[in-house]
Length: 203
Ligand code: DC
Image (tube, rainbow, N blue to C red; front, side, top):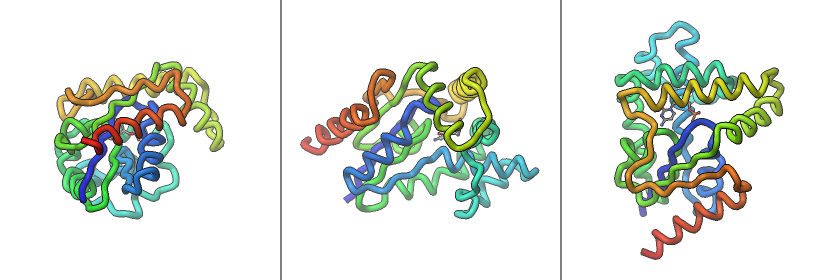
């Protein structure tokens, strides 16, 4: 059985958390596609050409310890605007999506470009303030010295770049269900997502 859940949305909206918990609930595999771009961006900070970095990405690159930093996030957003970088990462993502047993992928272009035929498409959003506050808690929780204003600026810069690029820009698929998590707890957001998957499964 293949069944694909595509989750897109701006930075720090809760896509990863919703994706991980949905995957656990349904016994599906989960791929955070942002990690592919972060690992590619991370390698460019070591001086490797972006397209070369994407084409030669290895599993160990996805396990680098500092992929979640704002600096690597910005590098990821920059390399993600390069069509050849995106092209180099398509096959891996599509193969993951079509594995048997079901898959959840979260990113920016899953419902629009990577898996336009996904059975379920969610577009997860939250206000800038809520996203910045959540990301600040995450980052300071693992010891980063960063202010709310810096986090807010970082998210806005990435969202603007990710939305304005011509290659697979961040936008909801026409048939995506919008899930605004601004006023929701994690449990409520996941419950809403589960309800949508079950609605589709019932046919
Ligand atoms: O989801 P994230 O914040 O870890 O993603 C980091 C950057 O990678 C994001 O700013 C844009 C890019 N990205 C993308 O262009 N397409 C995806 N499917 C996932 C991430």
